[in-house]
Image (cartoon, rainbow, N blue to C red; front, side):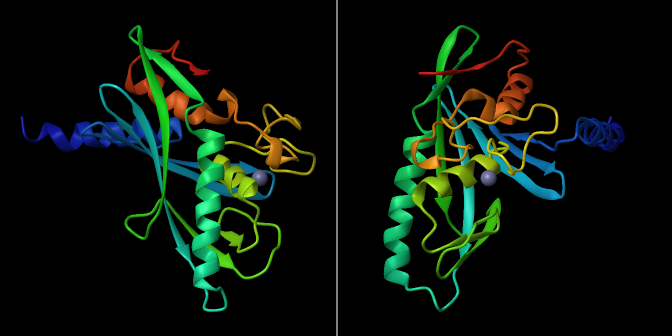
Length: 210
Ligand SMILES: [Zn+2]
């Protein structure tokens, strides 16, 4: 029996590679890592899905690398604002039905150096951010937009990193051209939805906005 395990493991890895994503289910946690691309723009969507009996928590660990030129007190202030915008955009907005049970989706974005999913340099000043480079003056809503990319969302403004299959321009969207007033939609969480559908073995599984 023991000799079968490596084969099973190889087959599982092969299946994951064929599906284009890697996940392992351990103690209710699904680790998701998905390469994303749009034209020449490439990034990685990565997060954990922590499944318990009464909620689904999407956890993202982000290690902020901060050059000396950035004032630490100002940074702490900014992080407070960034967290508030991330919460307002993503948290308490979606639920799903799992075997007829209503399960809320929560987002827990941790700025921590412990096993991070993403590493981001926080530069002084302001410039156009991307997944690995933010600026101390990056508006909070733009950080909430960058979290969208970490979750697997594409841009939805002209000139952005569009989905090749389904390009969308939507000014009302957090992924659109006006993140300050933009909101999150279920389509931004396609990757999460796909992983949950696999986890619960329910092809009809959907995320539903409140
Ligand atoms: Zn973007």
